[in-house]
Image (cartoon, rainbow over all chains, first blue to last red; front, side, top):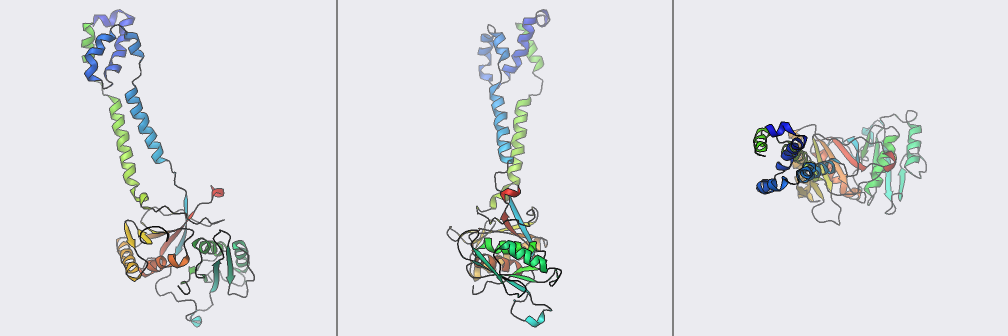
Length: 186
Length: 150
Protein backbone atom coordinates (compact mmCIF):
# COMPACT_ATOMS: atom_id res chain seq x y z
CA UNK A 1 0.00 0.00 0.00
CA UNK A 2 2.76 2.38 0.91
CA UNK A 3 4.52 1.69 -2.37
CA UNK A 4 1.51 2.82 -4.27
CA UNK A 5 1.44 6.20 -2.68
CA UNK A 6 5.16 6.95 -2.78
CA UNK A 7 6.32 7.16 -6.39
CA UNK A 8 4.95 8.01 -9.79
CA UNK A 9 6.85 5.10 -11.31
CA UNK A 10 5.15 2.55 -9.18
CA UNK A 11 1.75 3.96 -9.81
CA UNK A 12 2.11 3.71 -13.52
CA UNK A 13 3.29 0.17 -13.04
CA UNK A 14 0.18 -0.63 -11.07
CA UNK A 15 -2.05 0.73 -13.80
CA UNK A 16 -0.36 -1.39 -16.39
CA UNK A 17 -0.45 -4.54 -14.40
CA UNK A 18 -4.14 -5.50 -14.49
CA UNK A 19 -4.40 -4.92 -18.22
CA UNK A 20 -1.78 -7.51 -18.99
CA UNK A 21 -2.90 -9.88 -16.31
CA UNK A 22 -6.49 -10.10 -17.57
CA UNK A 23 -5.63 -10.94 -21.10
CA UNK A 24 -6.43 -14.56 -20.46
CA UNK A 25 -2.80 -15.59 -20.17
CA UNK A 26 -3.24 -16.91 -16.69
CA UNK A 27 -0.87 -19.90 -16.97
CA UNK A 28 1.98 -17.60 -17.81
CA UNK A 29 1.06 -15.11 -15.15
CA UNK A 30 3.63 -16.05 -12.56
CA UNK A 31 6.55 -16.22 -14.93
CA UNK A 32 5.78 -13.07 -16.85
CA UNK A 33 5.18 -11.11 -13.72
CA UNK A 34 8.70 -11.78 -12.56
CA UNK A 35 10.04 -10.73 -15.90
CA UNK A 36 7.87 -7.68 -15.92
CA UNK A 37 9.57 -6.25 -12.88
CA UNK A 38 12.42 -5.24 -15.08
CA UNK A 39 10.50 -4.03 -18.12
CA UNK A 40 7.48 -2.67 -16.33
CA UNK A 41 7.21 0.50 -18.36
CA UNK A 42 6.98 -1.38 -21.66
CA UNK A 43 4.35 -3.76 -20.37
CA UNK A 44 2.13 -0.95 -19.26
CA UNK A 45 2.00 0.35 -22.84
CA UNK A 46 1.17 -2.99 -24.46
CA UNK A 47 -2.24 -3.33 -26.07
CA UNK A 48 -4.29 -6.39 -25.42
CA UNK A 49 -4.47 -7.77 -28.93
CA UNK A 50 -6.32 -11.00 -28.29
CA UNK A 51 -9.41 -9.35 -26.96
CA UNK A 52 -9.26 -6.56 -29.50
CA UNK A 53 -9.06 -8.96 -32.44
CA UNK A 54 -11.94 -10.91 -30.93
CA UNK A 55 -14.12 -7.86 -30.86
CA UNK A 56 -12.96 -6.56 -34.22
CA UNK A 57 -13.76 -9.85 -35.90
CA UNK A 58 -17.14 -9.89 -34.28
CA UNK A 59 -17.85 -6.38 -35.52
CA UNK A 60 -16.67 -7.34 -39.00
CA UNK A 61 -18.96 -10.36 -38.99
CA UNK A 62 -21.82 -8.25 -37.73
CA UNK A 63 -21.52 -5.65 -40.47
CA UNK A 64 -20.99 -8.23 -43.18
CA UNK A 65 -24.15 -9.98 -42.14
CA UNK A 66 -26.22 -6.84 -41.90
CA UNK A 67 -25.01 -5.53 -45.25
CA UNK A 68 -27.49 -6.43 -47.94
CA UNK A 69 -25.43 -7.97 -50.69
CA UNK A 70 -28.46 -9.48 -52.36
CA UNK A 71 -29.87 -7.51 -55.24
CA UNK A 72 -32.89 -5.49 -54.38
CA UNK A 73 -36.15 -7.06 -55.42
CA UNK A 74 -39.43 -5.38 -56.16
CA UNK A 75 -42.86 -6.84 -56.53
CA UNK A 76 -45.92 -6.47 -58.70
CA UNK A 77 -48.84 -6.85 -56.34
CA UNK A 78 -51.99 -8.18 -57.87
CA UNK A 79 -55.19 -9.78 -56.78
CA UNK A 80 -55.97 -13.01 -58.48
CA UNK A 81 -59.59 -13.53 -59.33
CA UNK A 82 -61.16 -16.53 -57.72
CA UNK A 83 -61.51 -19.92 -59.23
CA UNK A 84 -64.71 -18.99 -60.97
CA UNK A 85 -63.11 -16.38 -63.19
CA UNK A 86 -64.25 -16.94 -66.71
CA UNK A 87 -62.06 -17.68 -69.63
CA UNK A 88 -61.85 -14.78 -71.98
CA UNK A 89 -63.64 -16.38 -74.89
CA UNK A 90 -66.00 -18.50 -72.84
CA UNK A 91 -69.01 -16.29 -72.73
CA UNK A 92 -68.69 -12.88 -74.27
CA UNK A 93 -72.29 -12.01 -73.47
CA UNK A 94 -71.88 -12.50 -69.75
CA UNK A 95 -69.72 -9.43 -69.55
CA UNK A 96 -71.03 -5.95 -70.06
CA UNK A 97 -67.91 -5.15 -71.99
CA UNK A 98 -65.45 -7.27 -73.79
CA UNK A 99 -62.07 -7.34 -72.07
CA UNK A 100 -59.16 -6.18 -74.12
CA UNK A 101 -56.75 -8.94 -74.88
CA UNK A 102 -53.09 -7.99 -74.97
CA UNK A 103 -51.04 -10.69 -76.61
CA UNK A 104 -47.34 -10.98 -76.00
CA UNK A 105 -44.94 -12.99 -78.07
CA UNK A 106 -41.22 -13.45 -77.56
CA UNK A 107 -39.31 -13.31 -80.78
CA UNK A 108 -35.92 -14.00 -79.25
CA UNK A 109 -33.92 -14.34 -76.09
CA UNK A 110 -33.21 -10.69 -75.57
CA UNK A 111 -34.94 -8.28 -73.29
CA UNK A 112 -36.28 -6.27 -76.21
CA UNK A 113 -37.26 -9.20 -78.44
CA UNK A 114 -40.97 -9.17 -78.02
CA UNK A 115 -44.07 -8.22 -79.93
CA UNK A 116 -47.30 -6.83 -78.54
CA UNK A 117 -50.68 -7.01 -80.20
CA UNK A 118 -54.18 -6.34 -78.94
CA UNK A 119 -57.52 -7.50 -80.17
CA UNK A 120 -59.01 -4.06 -79.76
CA UNK A 121 -59.63 -1.92 -82.85
CA UNK A 122 -58.99 1.12 -80.67
CA UNK A 123 -55.38 0.21 -80.31
CA UNK A 124 -53.31 0.20 -83.45
CA UNK A 125 -49.82 -1.01 -84.16
CA UNK A 126 -47.58 -1.27 -81.12
CA UNK A 127 -43.85 -1.21 -81.11
CA UNK A 128 -43.18 -1.55 -77.44
CA UNK A 129 -44.34 -1.31 -73.86
CA UNK A 130 -44.26 2.47 -73.90
CA UNK A 131 -46.48 2.63 -76.96
CA UNK A 132 -48.97 0.35 -75.25
CA UNK A 133 -48.90 2.49 -72.13
CA UNK A 134 -49.45 5.75 -73.97
CA UNK A 135 -52.14 4.35 -76.28
CA UNK A 136 -54.09 2.77 -73.46
CA UNK A 137 -53.48 5.76 -71.23
CA UNK A 138 -55.05 8.01 -73.84
CA UNK A 139 -58.09 5.76 -74.11
CA UNK A 140 -58.53 5.42 -70.39
CA UNK A 141 -61.27 7.60 -69.00
CA UNK A 142 -62.29 8.42 -72.55
CA UNK A 143 -63.39 5.35 -74.42
CA UNK A 144 -62.41 2.86 -71.76
CA UNK A 145 -63.34 2.91 -68.11
CA UNK A 146 -60.46 2.64 -65.65
CA UNK A 147 -61.87 -0.67 -64.51
CA UNK A 148 -62.16 -2.06 -67.99
CA UNK A 149 -60.87 -5.57 -67.84
CA UNK A 150 -57.52 -6.18 -69.44
CA UNK A 151 -56.16 -9.64 -70.09
CA UNK A 152 -52.51 -10.42 -70.64
CA UNK A 153 -52.45 -13.36 -73.03
CA UNK A 154 -48.94 -14.61 -73.67
CA UNK A 155 -48.56 -16.83 -76.67
CA UNK A 156 -46.87 -20.21 -76.26
CA UNK A 157 -43.22 -19.90 -75.43
CA UNK A 158 -43.43 -16.32 -74.24
CA UNK A 159 -40.79 -15.45 -71.73
CA UNK A 160 -41.72 -14.42 -68.23
CA UNK A 161 -39.91 -11.09 -68.47
CA UNK A 162 -41.94 -10.10 -71.52
CA UNK A 163 -45.13 -11.18 -69.81
CA UNK A 164 -44.33 -9.00 -66.83
CA UNK A 165 -43.32 -6.16 -69.12
CA UNK A 166 -46.71 -6.22 -70.80
CA UNK A 167 -48.40 -6.43 -67.42
CA UNK A 168 -46.43 -3.42 -66.25
CA UNK A 169 -47.30 -1.46 -69.38
CA UNK A 170 -51.02 -2.03 -68.88
CA UNK A 171 -50.83 -1.25 -65.18
CA UNK A 172 -48.95 1.96 -65.83
CA UNK A 173 -51.69 3.07 -68.18
CA UNK A 174 -53.90 3.13 -65.10
CA UNK A 175 -56.09 0.10 -65.56
CA UNK A 176 -57.08 -1.59 -62.35
CA UNK A 177 -58.34 -4.94 -63.49
CA UNK A 178 -55.51 -6.73 -65.20
CA UNK A 179 -55.31 -10.46 -65.20
CA UNK A 180 -53.37 -13.23 -66.83
CA UNK A 181 -54.96 -15.55 -69.32
CA UNK A 182 -54.55 -19.26 -69.30
CA UNK A 183 -51.71 -20.20 -71.63
CA UNK A 184 -53.12 -21.03 -75.01
CA UNK A 185 -52.27 -24.48 -76.17
CA UNK A 186 -50.32 -25.12 -72.96
CA UNK B 1 6.61 -5.36 -4.51
CA UNK B 2 4.58 -7.29 -2.05
CA UNK B 3 2.18 -4.39 -1.85
CA UNK B 4 1.34 -4.93 -5.49
CA UNK B 5 0.05 -8.38 -4.75
CA UNK B 6 -2.46 -6.93 -2.36
CA UNK B 7 -3.34 -4.32 -4.86
CA UNK B 8 -4.10 -6.97 -7.45
CA UNK B 9 -6.38 -8.72 -5.07
CA UNK B 10 -8.29 -5.54 -4.43
CA UNK B 11 -8.84 -4.59 -8.08
CA UNK B 12 -9.76 -8.13 -9.18
CA UNK B 13 -13.37 -7.51 -8.25
CA UNK B 14 -13.92 -5.30 -11.29
CA UNK B 15 -16.22 -6.63 -13.99
CA UNK B 16 -14.27 -7.85 -16.99
CA UNK B 17 -15.88 -6.11 -19.93
CA UNK B 18 -14.06 -7.76 -22.83
CA UNK B 19 -15.50 -11.29 -22.62
CA UNK B 20 -18.89 -9.81 -21.85
CA UNK B 21 -18.86 -7.72 -25.01
CA UNK B 22 -17.67 -10.78 -26.93
CA UNK B 23 -20.54 -12.82 -25.71
CA UNK B 24 -23.10 -10.07 -26.24
CA UNK B 25 -22.01 -9.58 -29.85
CA UNK B 26 -22.13 -13.32 -30.41
CA UNK B 27 -25.68 -13.41 -29.11
CA UNK B 28 -26.67 -10.52 -31.37
CA UNK B 29 -25.23 -12.29 -34.40
CA UNK B 30 -26.86 -15.54 -33.41
CA UNK B 31 -30.31 -14.04 -33.21
CA UNK B 32 -29.84 -12.09 -36.42
CA UNK B 33 -28.87 -15.26 -38.25
CA UNK B 34 -31.79 -17.16 -36.84
CA UNK B 35 -34.17 -14.46 -37.96
CA UNK B 36 -32.68 -14.51 -41.46
CA UNK B 37 -33.13 -18.20 -42.07
CA UNK B 38 -36.32 -17.43 -43.91
CA UNK B 39 -34.41 -15.47 -46.52
CA UNK B 40 -32.14 -18.40 -47.20
CA UNK B 41 -35.03 -20.32 -48.70
CA UNK B 42 -34.80 -18.21 -51.81
CA UNK B 43 -33.45 -19.89 -54.89
CA UNK B 44 -30.77 -18.05 -56.81
CA UNK B 45 -32.59 -16.71 -59.87
CA UNK B 46 -32.15 -13.90 -62.35
CA UNK B 47 -35.41 -12.09 -61.96
CA UNK B 48 -36.89 -10.07 -64.80
CA UNK B 49 -35.78 -6.48 -64.93
CA UNK B 50 -38.61 -4.26 -66.08
CA UNK B 51 -38.10 -0.71 -67.26
CA UNK B 52 -40.19 1.96 -65.50
CA UNK B 53 -41.76 -0.69 -63.35
CA UNK B 54 -44.69 0.29 -61.19
CA UNK B 55 -43.80 -1.94 -58.31
CA UNK B 56 -44.11 -2.09 -54.55
CA UNK B 57 -41.87 -3.30 -51.84
CA UNK B 58 -42.11 -7.06 -51.44
CA UNK B 59 -44.15 -8.03 -48.42
CA UNK B 60 -42.17 -9.20 -45.45
CA UNK B 61 -44.80 -10.71 -43.21
CA UNK B 62 -47.16 -13.62 -43.72
CA UNK B 63 -45.65 -14.48 -47.04
CA UNK B 64 -45.38 -17.76 -48.89
CA UNK B 65 -42.53 -17.78 -51.38
CA UNK B 66 -42.81 -20.04 -54.40
CA UNK B 67 -39.72 -20.30 -56.54
CA UNK B 68 -39.95 -21.44 -60.14
CA UNK B 69 -36.71 -23.29 -60.72
CA UNK B 70 -35.38 -23.09 -64.27
CA UNK B 71 -35.68 -26.16 -66.44
CA UNK B 72 -31.96 -26.72 -66.79
CA UNK B 73 -31.46 -27.00 -63.05
CA UNK B 74 -31.83 -30.09 -60.97
CA UNK B 75 -34.90 -30.70 -58.93
CA UNK B 76 -38.59 -30.11 -59.17
CA UNK B 77 -39.75 -26.95 -60.94
CA UNK B 78 -41.73 -25.49 -58.07
CA UNK B 79 -40.16 -24.97 -54.68
CA UNK B 80 -42.04 -23.74 -51.65
CA UNK B 81 -39.68 -23.52 -48.71
CA UNK B 82 -38.17 -26.96 -48.44
CA UNK B 83 -41.00 -28.60 -50.36
CA UNK B 84 -40.71 -29.50 -54.03
CA UNK B 85 -43.57 -29.91 -56.46
CA UNK B 86 -43.53 -31.33 -59.94
CA UNK B 87 -45.23 -29.84 -62.93
CA UNK B 88 -47.79 -32.60 -63.26
CA UNK B 89 -51.21 -33.24 -61.83
CA UNK B 90 -49.93 -34.83 -58.61
CA UNK B 91 -47.36 -32.14 -58.02
CA UNK B 92 -49.76 -29.29 -58.63
CA UNK B 93 -52.40 -30.90 -56.43
CA UNK B 94 -49.79 -31.09 -53.71
CA UNK B 95 -48.99 -27.44 -54.22
CA UNK B 96 -52.65 -26.51 -53.95
CA UNK B 97 -53.00 -28.56 -50.78
CA UNK B 98 -49.98 -26.88 -49.25
CA UNK B 99 -51.33 -23.45 -50.17
CA UNK B 100 -54.69 -24.32 -48.64
CA UNK B 101 -52.84 -25.21 -45.47
CA UNK B 102 -51.13 -21.82 -45.58
CA UNK B 103 -54.47 -20.14 -46.10
CA UNK B 104 -55.94 -21.91 -43.10
CA UNK B 105 -53.02 -20.72 -41.02
CA UNK B 106 -53.35 -17.14 -42.26
CA UNK B 107 -56.10 -16.16 -44.71
CA UNK B 108 -54.23 -12.97 -45.52
CA UNK B 109 -51.16 -14.81 -46.75
CA UNK B 110 -49.39 -13.20 -49.67
CA UNK B 111 -47.92 -15.56 -52.22
CA UNK B 112 -44.66 -14.33 -53.66
CA UNK B 113 -43.79 -15.83 -57.02
CA UNK B 114 -40.18 -15.72 -58.06
CA UNK B 115 -39.48 -16.84 -61.60
CA UNK B 116 -36.40 -16.54 -63.73
CA UNK B 117 -36.55 -14.07 -66.60
CA UNK B 118 -35.90 -16.88 -69.08
CA UNK B 119 -38.87 -18.84 -67.80
CA UNK B 120 -41.75 -19.36 -70.19
CA UNK B 121 -45.19 -18.30 -69.19
CA UNK B 122 -46.46 -21.87 -69.47
CA UNK B 123 -44.24 -22.85 -66.55
CA UNK B 124 -45.23 -19.93 -64.34
CA UNK B 125 -48.94 -20.01 -64.94
CA UNK B 126 -49.59 -23.28 -63.03
CA UNK B 127 -48.39 -21.50 -59.90
CA UNK B 128 -50.87 -18.68 -60.38
CA UNK B 129 -53.55 -21.25 -61.10
CA UNK B 130 -52.66 -23.18 -57.94
CA UNK B 131 -52.79 -20.02 -55.85
CA UNK B 132 -56.18 -19.21 -57.30
CA UNK B 133 -57.40 -22.77 -56.77
CA UNK B 134 -56.27 -22.67 -53.16
CA UNK B 135 -58.47 -19.65 -52.57
CA UNK B 136 -55.65 -17.20 -52.00
CA UNK B 137 -55.92 -13.95 -53.88
CA UNK B 138 -52.98 -11.79 -52.96
CA UNK B 139 -49.97 -12.42 -55.15
CA UNK B 140 -46.71 -10.63 -55.68
CA UNK B 141 -44.59 -11.23 -58.76
CA UNK B 142 -40.99 -10.39 -58.09
CA UNK B 143 -38.73 -8.39 -60.34
CA UNK B 144 -35.27 -7.00 -60.03
CA UNK B 145 -35.01 -3.39 -59.06
CA UNK B 146 -33.64 -1.34 -61.90
CA UNK B 147 -30.21 0.12 -61.30
CA UNK B 148 -31.28 3.54 -62.48
CA UNK B 149 -33.97 3.71 -59.87
CA UNK B 150 -31.67 3.19 -56.96
